[in-house]
Image (cartoon, rainbow, N blue to C red; front, side):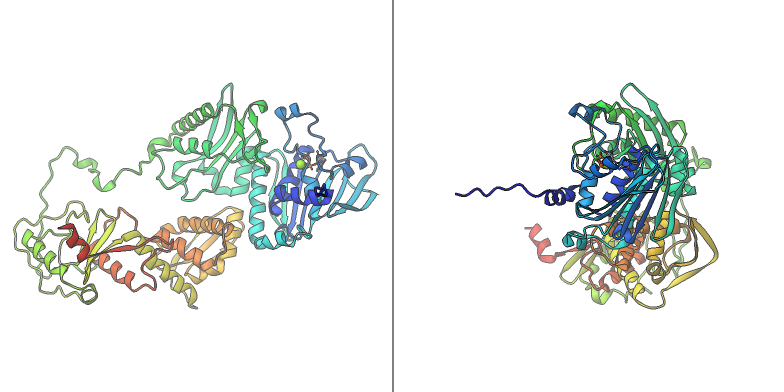
Length: 615
Ligand code: ADP
Ligand code: MG
């Protein structure tokens, strides 16, 4: 048989390797920013166009390159940063593989101008798909400017795979945040399509964080500081009351390199245990310094994962350091979410014996009136007979036309007002719905019964409402008497601008959107004014996450988020009217069977099923 194995030509090998290093414009941004930092730059400018698809340019004032180095830097495995394998264990630079420029040059049009400080003139090189098409001596300032144009111009499949400019810009911004947070002593400028997104002067860590995430961040931060023989920890955590439902501002840096570590994340969350609600996350900006020899950053091509020698000890130190900070800043005891306020005895009543509540029976009492707040326990017989009756009533015929007018009478003198309003063990009155474990609503139907998950049902109802709202021209909204201002970070404001139209269509009204704040003058029906900040936070972060994920429609994402945020939750007590209303609304939905998040909303148990249990 003839020999068939051939070595791939360099440019093909480079293109293949590029796939590993460059997934999207943000990867290029990361590599170029890191190169600028490795070159000792003090001022770095990042310029992008069309989400980096048209242009990514990084200009630095670092050491620059000689003409020979300028040419060599685009060769694979060309690096000035390590010479022998042992150097890998004492890395102080971001890069070391010597792959980035070779990879980028294989899949884009690259133009570089560079000059070391001592040289009179610099070098200007153009490379397209690994081929040098131009090289000349040039007059250029000290440092390096690297412009990457038309990314993936020769790999259409990859180019088509890129998301919208907005989404790519968001990935770039994330990358920019990570680099800028790790290097507060370097000043950064970031421009997109001609407008300045960030202008970060050199500063300390705290100010850098605040510059990036907005002035309101300052009050949220609690400093963290610890030094042990194996690790030095510094940085900030956010106060527990600012914990968010979404993972957002969570950053670990090891030796000034951003890393992802689910394990260390767990250590931080563990330190917050008991201080924040189960489904919320603290924010953190934690800088770890360890001996470069004790970590291996070589295990991931894009280098965001790190292997530590002694992970367990690190975990323990991190957790106790954060606990200590939380305690020291006296934020620990201020909050107790587990505590049920309903069960709290007001101070004045402590040590006094309970007074039997007195209830005057109102003959015109109608439990279905909105204003009724006190609940009553009817006698056993009453309940019993009603329970039996309801087994025979069809939901369809009963719902919406419940006639209670004269069917209520209180026959017993054992009537007591419920002490804890709404906390009913047994579902009373004539309603055909029951709430079980503050979680499910049970109601009878012709064929048996349905058990409805209250939270999912409400999500479905609200979701359809908002979605419908967003398709009609004039959304229903409540005008606020006193407009108020909510502050956000710049990137949050950018997102708000993106989704502004849809927010309007579901009923938000904004008077003004500034760089770091918005003025709200109207909110959708059902949204309480006090919740607006929280809801917008949630909308922004869900939107950012969704968009980073799969295909989407803005109004769908926002309706889902609003539904999730506003729906009654498991654990909430629903009075009879609310239960009935919910059941009615649910079955009026286009698709009552699943929640907006594709979870079953209710199950039916037929009479047959029940009969079988009694065999
Ligand atoms: P690595 O960073 O892993 O060494 P790169 O392909 O990113 O590999 O860069 C190759 C080399 O080019 C670097 O080692 C460095 O010597 C040089 N270089 C790249 N960018 C710059 C820059 N902005 N300023 C000075 N030198 C640079
Ligand atoms: Mg590099």
